[in-house]
Image (cartoon, rainbow, N blue to C red):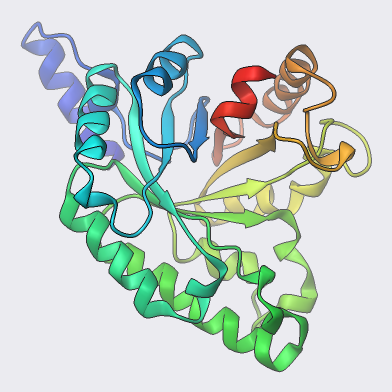
Length: 275
């Protein structure tokens, strides 16, 4: 995808044409940038805000049945015209066990044919089955099969994951759970939800193992931060926009040269808008 995107850019430049930003790169490639979760229905204010903020890709919530709403097609077309990537995003913890629902959504996204990628925000650890080892293993096996199904679309794929999936308690065979995930997707959006970059329990600390593994496996690492109301230490809601920028700059200064570094994903549109 990276090679194809570069070839397209070269052809456009040779032809003397301006290349839209969305046509010049693929979703989830390494490199600096900012992505934005959008849970709200698609609308022009989202595009305007994203362009003004220099957003690279919108993770647009497109839940099951989205394709029957013409607003989605219009939004994706307008976002592309504005130079934005638009990634289909959805998920529910139950999908980790009810994979037919997950597969139906994957098929719908693929048939829609306009998205630049697909990201699963499933969070299976919210299921009651996660609490017992036997049931948790069943959940994990099923979840990993769901990620494999996304790869069959031929689209760039990502999974939103917690930073603690490097815990040996979730090891399967010789690999950590996060390694199994990385083997099945192009990128991991690591929810490193902390309100400071440096020091113990900071962003760089909690996601350090993921960064090392991403470098080793060739997986893009996108660092996710929280701006919505939540526990004080996990969100920038209390600290505000200026402090968010300070901490993101510190992460970029430390990890910006890593081959896996893929910038940031901000959760989410409305809360970031008012931060």
